[in-house]
Length: 322
Image (cartoon, rainbow, N blue to C red):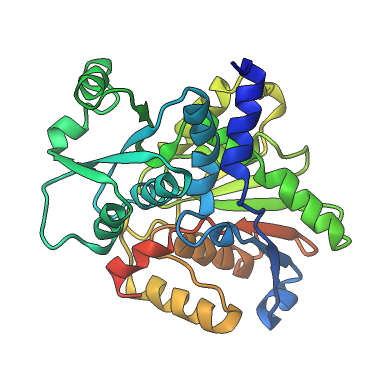
């Protein structure tokens, strides 16, 4: 029988075997030159064609943990267009896990592209009403799921937990190494789109004094500040007194989660034409729209080096005819 350390190493090697670090890409245009800022994109959307972006970052150590426990079935939650459902189904199939998706709302035929894809990857789809869905984190409801489905590894909605944050933390040292290879001493700002706050918490946990992490909220409201702080306070490996250089930008949600306007859609199309990078309408489109608006307003001092994390989610564009 292998010892626990040996099992952990084997599980980690298995999960990471064919997943490469994402590249970093500098955007260049007269707009950025005139603003005297350097803008790089951490292309996490290129990690894997089916489960890249921050969803892979969040899944990585959860999959390793599931493998260490010899659990072969993943169960998670999401809406009908959930990036997390899409990524969990694909990663589960890729790494040999069975997957179960608890979907908010009623079943509709034909399935939309997200759920159709998840089903094609072998994910079992089970639908519950919104009242039941609100109970998804309650111990009694979780126990009922375990009794119904057996030995399962439960991933929270969006995949956000402490193991997810551990995966997101790895973005910062990767960026530092890649910038160093290009002769840069580091970045001043690192930005991400925010839905649950886990990615921002991971970035903020790893930045140095003088740097700032900015999360562009994709949702209406100001609750993300609390969520990020909660994630960071629960992370025992970091000294909260040394972590202050982060904030949530709430001005660019375009009406709320999965809401978009013609202005946002036009920006996404123009961005792809000019820079050759596709954005999604739920998360990264809003982040880059906000980032460019802030650059226009001279929020960032001349000479600033900004890194924007492309967190994927492009599958959701099918719902916006993009």
